[in-house]
Image 1 (cartoon, rainbow, N blue to C red):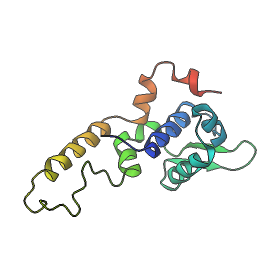
Image 2: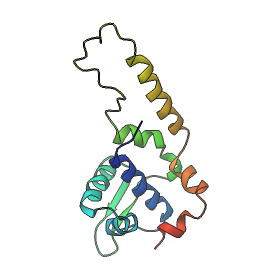
Image 3: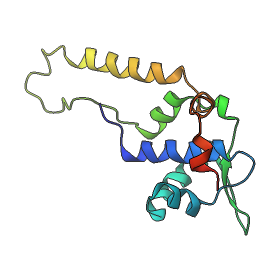
Image 4: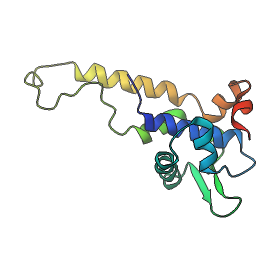
Length: 138
């Protein structure tokens, strides 16, 4: 199973905002830190703001910060938001679909994957990632 780059970027933005919880972080800083296209990152940030994960502040000292405490953001919740079509196989138009029993175990596997991520919060990852601030605090 592979998550999209969009989800990867969403986690990076959230980690950066969580580590720098005392200030609004400019999107340009996040883009430079991770060597990601700022234009692409803006789309991810906009979605995270619209979805209530981040708040955005305009102006000279503007940027993004967490909209709620890091211990209230579950990793599984973020994945469900950023990966709305998590299918391991594509059964559309398959000849054997009416008789095939593979889709159910695949769906169970996805649910188990996301349920595992639901056991962890953004705060858990930041707290357990010793030295993360060395890379993300400017």
